[in-house]
Image (cartoon, rainbow, N blue to C red; front, side, top):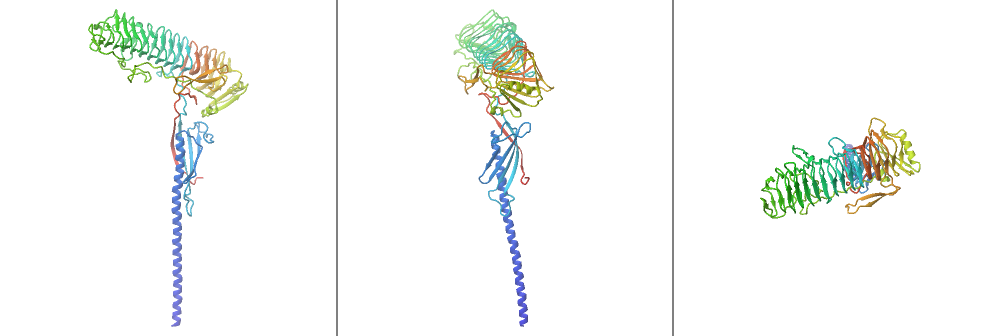
Length: 620
């Protein structure tokens, strides 16, 4: 019995031990499962936090790039933290130096952002850090000025005999001339663009223009003029169009107009009807006179009177005549002199039978078949309607009397040689030559082997960098900034070294020695005008010059003087004072000059677009 009980006790002990072993195994499994679950759970949490932090770094950098703040690195130390670095590339695909911000104007960037979890994982570090890489396409105007003129002169300038300013391509009409002074156009000129001057305009014998003429002063035409566009003058003098002149647009002036251009009647665009002036003639501060059969296809509006004499054609005015404070007179007329109505705050001295719209006509006091106007007429918008510049001031959109405003003043751009300005020449190799021998050093470099985009800054010469009986071989795009100017003498030639056409720029820096800028009165925002001492750099081309395979940009805030024939000139001229030679042609060719700015420059604009975004955690 005892023996059996003891055997049973042994069996019970074994059972207890076995049970304890089972409990231990189960407990270990439960503990392992709990530990593994905690590690997984905290790692997953850390993973979400670190990835969000890395994405936040990309977004923070992207926000800076979108406004043109090209940072090299960015970080956040508060949880969840990130560290982001940025690599920039230029248009050639080369990596750009980067300190605190990138030097130059990049076209793309790579952002590498590593985020750190606020709460690291327990038992696992897999999710504590995540790295995201994004690529971004960048765009920027950098506030650069669009150089859109064929010739720009801060002062007055003269175009002499047999000069042609040609558009860049057929139908473009973009060979524009601009002056903050007066423009003198002499015999046999053909200008295929707009003409704008803050001063006066003087046209002599057989001048032709394809664009609009707008001047702040008066326009005078001594002989025949052929203008495809319109003429606007803010001056109060008398504008006279002599025999054989023809205007396809309209004439609007603050002064008076005298038309005596019967032989100038030609078919106007879109019609077979022939008129001396195809559009309307508006004399906001004076009178209009039509002599010897001069004709107006549109309407004639004046402040103080309208007179038509000795008409050789049936109609003098195709549409309406309006006189605000005066009468209408006529003599030796025939047929329907005025195709539309006549409204005048004075007497109408033209027979009612010669007025096409008698019912719409009136004068100050009723009589001779004309009704009373009752109130003085105002100058209306042109009839037929035409498109006029919004800044012109006529027709007035307010209750104010209409007036021809001077054209919007433009400032001569600045092209500087400072380190900040040179940094805008992205993709160009900048080489500096300084000292008394710098001109010779620069020419020695140019005579050797070079290629690509080269910018040469030449300072310290005793005189201008000069060529005489030489050829400047252009082996790539070339910009020369010479603080002492340029001189081209006998039989100078510019030629591309290959069949490729290159850009050539001769630039006297606007911040060079002897150049100062002064505020121009009554400009908002304030504009500045250059002045030069003897130390200022000029550009002088003194003899016949031939250009092949190059687009040439000439710039000096002082003077650009061309005294002899240019052959093959394609490009632009910007100067403080410009002269252009006889028997020469310039073909407008737009040339991009990095960093050209002025007070009227457009505000800088920037764009950024993410083109790819990848989680690269674990790639090293």
